[in-house]
Image (cartoon, rainbow, N blue to C red; front, side, top):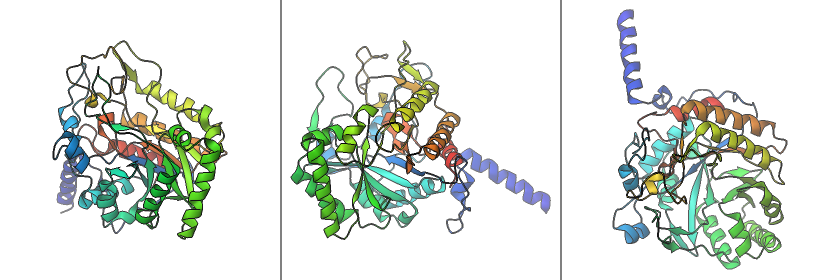
Length: 407
């Protein structure tokens, strides 16, 4: 009997390994493993993962590209551009609808089981025109297990247009320009109050509701400069107080340390970055090595942490935007511009996990005590940065993250 049980267990483990899933994904939800201290620090920073909510149909994309079109089409059709180039990607869960709460439930369990604390949703608003909010409002917030993760907003306040694919030698086709104003910001905050800020699992830092701004320079510039922006943000806090809500913790997605003092003067409380994608060492074949990108991460962390605001270190899983490029354009691209740029190669779960461990240690040792480490990304499939299972590595990146931060 004992030999039979052992044989069956070995068969089961082989089947699980063949599916590319971890045993943690199969554990009963009612009895999660006990959380232990992080390998990096007992005072563990929160793990915040960027969520790109573009994997469902919505009205504006129906109008722009035809009914039912989603960016999954670019994932499916992406050709390899050079020998050994890993394209197209093959999501292990298929091409699912991220606005469906049943799929959100699976995503939440997978993330929470692997040490992720917060989904930071890219959020799009253009003078009242909202796009892609369905993944958050119809998916995540209606999932029965939503309490397992916190969430927050990263206002992706950049111009939106036809990235699908980007024309190589023609002007970029703008669909929605970004225009900030005091009146529009008040509308935005009112929308946040109504739809998000009262949610019990909205992420807070020091009791403040976290909102990140993708392009703080445009935000501050269009609102009239640092002094006017700071006064306006105080007005928004007063608006929140009248609604019996705490004030906002404003986080700036900074591209360099030189502007951080300006962000502080404008009323921001912390900084991070969306990603780090350029090591400055591009081969003649338009590739960069992930190990060089790891060096660029360390240099950026050091520079940003020495600036005027607490900095949450960012870790980038990978960089390959060729799915958003026209297939007819030969590689390497003669005129580099987004998305016609370099491809990062050599990113492995082991190297990603090492960088996560270093980020956790960096945050723990920083005198500013940053509250989080930010990971790019959960599902930036067409930018080559994803933690969701993909056929080649399954859940290996997530398992490396869990080992780095603990649960």
